[in-house]
Structures are given as C-alpha cells and as structure tokens.
Length: 180
Image (spheres, rainbow, N blue to C red):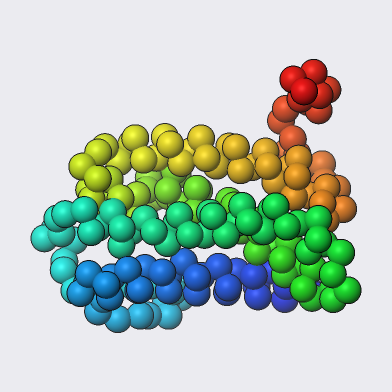
C-alpha cells in the first residue's frame, strides 16, 4: 500500500508540474482560460479554440511543459545515487517514482499519445510548422533512450531489480562495456 501512496504522490507532482507549466506559458501569451480537475487528470484550457490557433506560441504553450519535465527527470537521474541514500523512505520512493515518470510519461505522451487523444504533439507540430509524425518519431526515440536509461541507471541506483520486459535493459551490458 505504501508504494501506491509514494507513486500517487509522485504522479501528482508530475501532473502539477506539467500542467502548471502549460498554464504559465499560456498566461505569458494571454491564452490561459482555466484549470480543471477532470476524471482523467488535470487540464488547462485555453482562450483560442483549437481550429483558430496559429503561430509559434503554440509550440511554446504545448512544448515547454514537456521539455521542463524531461530536463527535471534528467537532473533527478543524475542525482539518483545521492537521492537513493536519503534516510526517509518516503523521499527515496517518491524521488524514484518521480524520476521514472518524468523520464517516461512525456515521451510516451508525445510519441504514442497522439494516435489516441491528440494532445501536446499537435500544438508543438502546428507551432513549429512541421509534421506531427516528425514530433512523434523524435519523441519515440527519446522514449526508447529514456527507457534504457531507466533500466540501466535509475533502477540500479535505487536497488530495484525486475524481470519486466518493459523495464529490463534491451542492450546487453557486455556490449556496452566493449564500447568503453
């Protein structure tokens, strides 16, 4: 039960950080309308309807939150060795789950999510004037790299062992050692 509490705490931090950044960026461009708590999570709504949106600001409104969560995830991954040795079980578990979510959720959201629900990838693509599929392909590669970072760096830093195919390294360690 404790693990679920730690996970839900980390998920709440992720959601507030991600959606809060959407709200901040939208406010900077005069596009913030409201913040909602929905059954599926938090949501920021904007002034301009989707069909009337144009301009680079939509790349910022849609993309900066994803960039921030990824950068924060990389920072926590760099600090994982220290964070895993904290004396508080709550903090250690929360940092573990938060790092995991920060590294994987937005790349998943931007690569596979658009096939299901649209989302931030559409705003980034529209704002940059590029194909949504280009955004999806790029973030799918980020997802694969981050998944491998989780398997090879995050899990060992926190002493987590798993046989789960999704979280197990797909690159044999001996091949990596030969590259060094």
